[in-house]
Image (cartoon, rainbow, N blue to C red; front, side, top):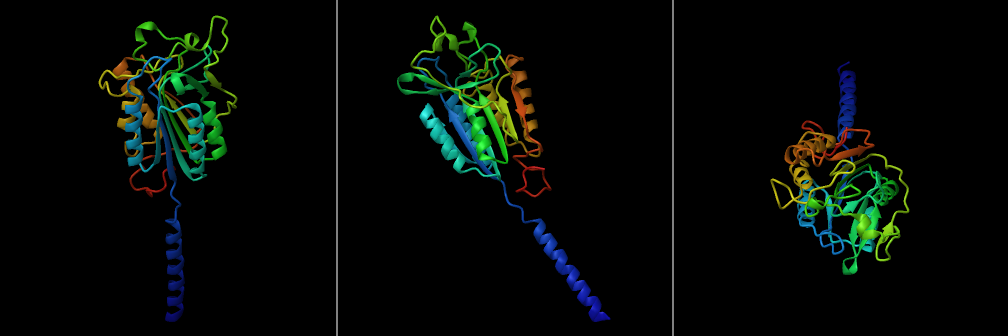
Length: 285
């Protein structure tokens, strides 16, 4: 009888140990990031802080465990090369973070399609649709994508803020009087507008707003970058709450002149600094 009880107890404990052992075998989510800071424009107005912002963002992301690639003053060909190399690091168990600081704008009034300005030889620019990123994310099939675009989303600018915003009067730069694209401007927009799954995109501004290049409280960073640097590593909050805290900081500093806006297809809460008491490698619940 005692032997029977012992054997039953032993089998039960063995199953329990196996169950507990299995429960902690959780494959960690990889973290990879691409950070771009474009500053040295020639045909567009000069910017002061994109490189400062990109370098600071790289440091924060690396502290959060991201394998981070930093690229400065990137041209069109280099941008595409970076995206191809980036995709090689990504699988379906990866958190992706992409950050861009520099000039951007829309090309048509009331359009929601943003174009990122890349720096070419002799100061020329190429304009790459944000949908290029959409295509990359869809093809790479990452588990989660987080995008932060620290640039303008307006169609026209006001002259009195030309030195402090990250936008440009694209009609002056790109088109002649007949609205014909100038030959020294490369326009890359042959991509689908399909929004990628499991993705959050944060724009530094609402639609038709300018993104400030220098902050009131910190002239070495843009207000959006400074707020994101301050809050990205906040513990025990989902990524959506991180960007709400960024929004709160922007509203306080700029009195509503710039308000970040997010679009999301995330289906779960995502923590970059997981909740205490949860398994540390399981960053999404």
